[in-house]
Length: 184
Image 1 (tube, one colour):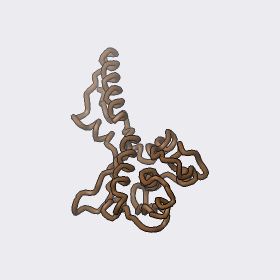
Image 2: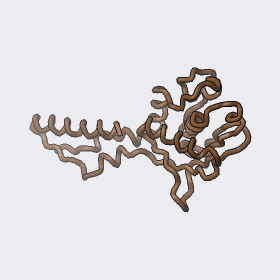
Image 3: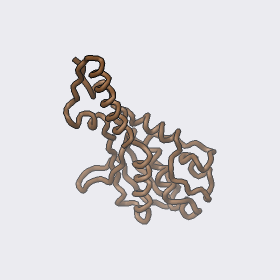
Image 4: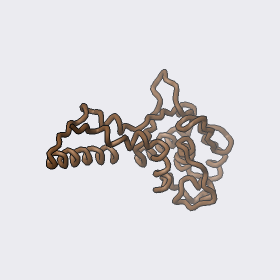
């Protein structure tokens, strides 16, 4: 992930700079930097998403490709998921109980009208990740939702939407740089 690579490069640069300045730097225990940079894992259960399961999995994968601060994973057997995803005959919607937790409904009403199932899934997961609707809006804005029209199939968040999710979950992705090294 980009944030982890950046942190490793920064750690190396600080170590070299301190050595050149006569100070001593000690690396944190192995894996400490990676732990402070680990994404928050949010699990989802798409078992009741019926014919939309592939679209749900793709929507989750799109968020995983787009941000570092949170990772959406299918729930393991026997565990309780942060997000339940259900298919129903209504309009798509997300009921968020707290950041990273809630229920997503992939409504057949929008699908029957011609809206793209992967865009719907990615959009509704965006709500669970803390994003509001931004209507009306262009197709380039995932959170513009249905206001972009049925011809819009873009399931990817734009830069502002990615940044907002990173801010929502960013403590895990950014990790305090001063914890990576100790200086004597």
